[in-house]
Image (cartoon, rainbow, N blue to C red; front, side, top):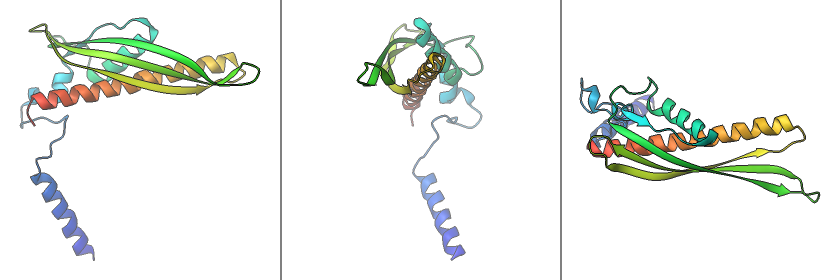
Length: 172
């Protein structure tokens, strides 16, 4: 039984290698780090985003796209506009709420700085919820955490979309 299992694993690995599978964030050719999607993502300058929610999103994007700092020679600029809505759910008979949701919608545009033309754009959205309790401090902390989670989700979605864009233009 162990030999057949080993043979099966080997067969699956060989089949996977033959299908042209390549990691999105890996380098395209040995020794050429400039051809990787990671290098493309790290060449993006993120424009300021209005409001506190925008600051949360921009910080999330910087952590995800350019973890080594702002690029010295940016090739792209990411423009993001963000809208935030908060609504109370589960309204009780005494007109108090016990549950709230926060919804972020971000429209983003990736601009090539050499041409000044937009090369990719899209929309990402996230909805998070939090409980409303008797303590005002607990409500503020829960809402702050819900906003941070929404910004992180949108940041990850934008990073994935940009990674797929760069992977597609580099030829897969």
